[in-house]
Length: 139
Image 1 (spheres, rainbow, N blue to C red):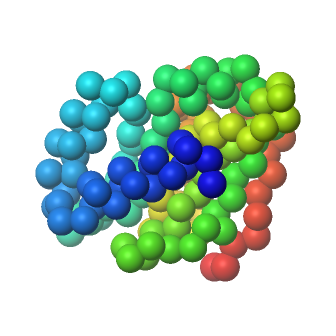
Image 2: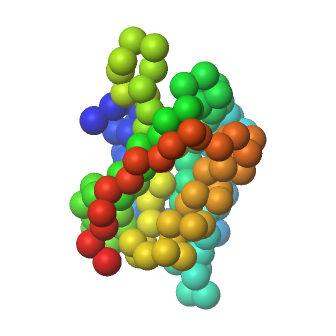
């Protein structure tokens, strides 16, 4: 697991452990201001987090350079919040995996995937990859 993915996973565990929706939003805003992180998320009518996409300026820069091909893998198991971890990755000029963005989704369905892909494209300035490789999901 890459450092960016591991760090994202740890951040989300800390943030979601005992925070409600408003506290979560406040913490994301603080991280965005102080560390240059970019978060986009969606909550349901009960103020529960249903989807989140995270990237930062280094990941966006990497995508601008190496985003011709993207792998999107929604096969990482769920956590105690029943959310699936789904990274966007590619290959750099040294043939190493590089992470462009990470997402957590509550449901592996068309609506969630469309939301994640739309937000990913928006955070990457609308630049479309030449190809996307995905894995078959359980739902």
